[in-house]
Image (cartoon, rainbow, N blue to C red; front, side, top):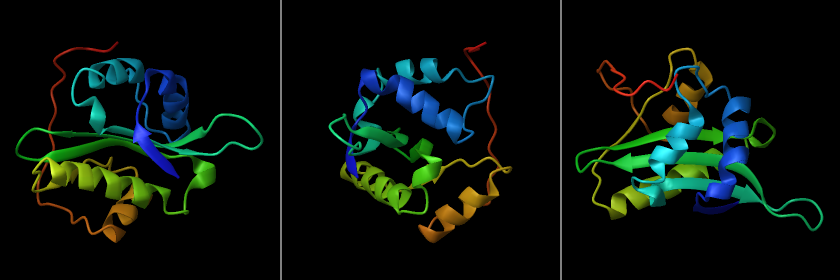
Length: 145
């Protein structure tokens, strides 16, 4: 898998991937999330591609949107195409995210996983992430709908 920074031309494929992986929610417009990320640490929005069959362009099969606020790093929209899961692509992409955050001086990475997504919890367990004794709260400042 080749890992590179997200490009605007990746938008349709990224949104389709997120839909296929069940990451999109009605209250989050993925196009707005991409637009916002393009203005804030765009180098931490990564995609993974594999060669297409034949002469076509590479196919986007994975994404990870990360950020660092000077205290903690965060990762969102980690996704691997359902037909390419269990091939260590997610692990490889997370390792790249971690290295980029570490290069920025980031001491700790947080991931948020919906409680309904139990299979992803075991993925992060295998990567060495431990469940913090914390509760996540959120407040929407800009409605997407």
